Every structure is written in structure tokens, then in C-alpha cells.
Length: 342
Image (tube, rainbow, N blue to C red; front, side, top):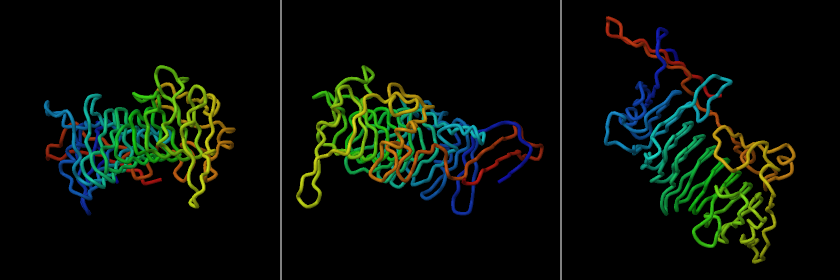
């Protein structure tokens, strides 16, 4: 889509699609302006650039609320150097939170500098980075993250974690984790990792305590773990994990998991000790062909049916420039280019 050719300044742009009409908003506040104008079922597409997650013209606004069932699509949570596309950054500040307070919202391809609170159900976060905390809500709320990178998560709702990386799942309950990498720290009692009532498949679990990655902390007994790799200090991370009933009343010991001595033995570069937004989480060739999940693909983020890929698959705005001044006739030259879905 080419709107005009004469333009001079790169500008963050949000396009609001409603049925057959499209409206554009420009500048740092264009995201919240598009949200204000949207109705249920609309699509909001953000270009590369930096957007305010709340109205920066209001000194009293310290958080934003998404209260409409919209689809929000950014240009990516990481820069695409091959196609020369910068990421979409939504800025909310370390102390500010974006509250998602409507069912059936999808967010795709955005780098959030602050925190998200998923205060509703059937919320899907896809190919996003959350540098603050992701609070997945209270009992009865169910959300999903796919191909995401989260620094911290917590909650007592239900969170499906698929082909994603979580640096610290602290005080996290009711997780359903598939082909992901999950770090966690100790709970306040028993010195156990602070994840309960959760199920893990084909994933990698380790102690991400900043004190030491060699502290001997186990998963609590309320968790179920299958075809996973685990790392703590003395190899006891799965000692509390129970077996399962095969459906015929027969108890089968859980012997599908493997303990590793060090993350460096399976990853090319990942050490688990620090959050690194440029990490790729790739397994070594040997590990990728040795440690397999129940589906025969490698454990971790590149296995399963949705291998980790940080780049959006939807059409993205690759160029948006707006002239600094309008013409004498009162028109403003705008140049927008959109790359089709790959």
C-alpha cells in the first residue's frame, strides 16, 4: 500500500481497520489514539518505532487499559536485520502496567518495556517480549503465550506457555507448559521452586536464582513433568515429581525426564544466569538430536509443532514517513509501505 511518495520524517503509525475502512494515526500516542477509536473486532497494526502505552499528554495516566476485543499487530519484538525492519516498542515504564480487561484479545509482534496484567480470559500473546512482569490473573482466567520472551510471570489463573522463554516463573500456579524454557526461584517455604499445580511437556526447567544456579531446589510435588530436562545443584530437581496412572489403575513411575549437569552442555550460548534479549536459545546439534520430546522433536523452544520464531507472520508496516509541513492546500504527504505476510 503506497499512500504518497513525498515524505520527510519517520513517524510511528497505527492503522485502525474497521470492516472495509482504514484510518491512520501518527506519532508516539497513535497506539492509544487508535485504541480509543476502536470497537470490538477491529484490527490495529503498528509500524516499527516507539509508542506510548498510555497517553503521554496526561500526567495522571500511569497505566493503560485495553477494554475492547481487538487484534493488535506490531512489526516484531526483535529487529529483522535481513528485511531491515525495526521492532515495535510499546513504552509504559518500569512502574506502569498495561491492563488487558476484555476477553478474546490477541496481541502479536510487540516489545513491551513495562508489565502486562491479563485481567480477563482467552487472551493470546504471540511473538512478544515483556520486559516487566506478566501477571496472568486470578482463578478462572485462562490465557496463552506463544513464541514469547518474558522476564517474570506470576498468577493463579491458567497460563498456557508454548515454545516460549520465561526467565523467572516466581509464585506461578496452574501453568501448562509445552516446548519451553522455564527458570524459577525458590518459594518462601521448603526451599522449593515456586511453581505449583502445573504440567510440563518437552521443556527445560532450571533454577534461575540470582544467588547461584547450583542451589538444590526441587519442583514441588503438585507438578507433573514429562520428557523434560532439569537443572539444579545436586540433580534432585525432579525428586518430588510423582508418577501417573496409565488409565487402567496401574501406577507408572515418571522416568521420562533427564537431569543435566550444566546448561552449557546442551545450549550453544545460553547460560540461564542473566536475561539477555539477544539470546537465541538454540540447542547444540548433539543435544537437539539426543533429548527428544514425546513427539520425537527436540525439547525446548525449537521443538513441537510451533518452533520458536520471533518474526511476525502477518503483514507489517515496513515504512512510514510523514512530511513535516502540510501543503498550502492543507494536505499532508504520507508514505506508507506494507510487506505482505511471509
